[in-house]
Every structure is written in structure tokens, then in C-alpha cells.
Length: 80
Image 1: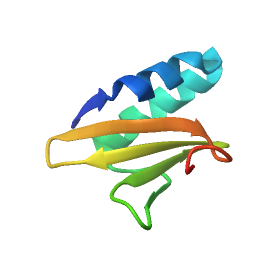
Image 2: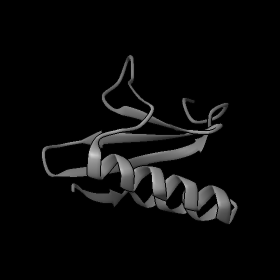
Image 3: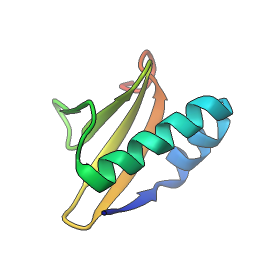
């Protein structure tokens, strides 16, 4: 399983979500870190991967040993 780290801005955004959404995002991140399974897609125009969790998106940067959560937010606002 890869280690998951959060940028301060991503951790702050995640803490503002309702608890059910926050738990779903963390569960999907843990599943992705353990198995590599999830609704992911490479980003265009910048480095990174997006993980889809309902109407929320999590922007990730992945290395061999770690997954860094760069941003998290609603799908309408996350790419701006």
C-alpha cells in the first residue's frame, strides 16, 4: 500500500466537507492506494490524476511509493 500525504490546502478543503463525503473520499483514497482501483483519469494540461468520488474530485500526484493529494473539491470548482 502506498503512503497518502496531503498538501495543507487539500487537508483544509477536506476538513470542510460534510462527514459522510469526507469518509467516502478517504475510503476511496485508501482503496486506490491499496489496489490501484478507482475511477481515475489522467489530467490534461497539467501533471496529475483525478479520482472521482460522486460529484467530488480529488487531484493526486503519484510516485512509486506515495500518493500526494493536491486538491479536493466539487467537480464544478476543482479545475479552476
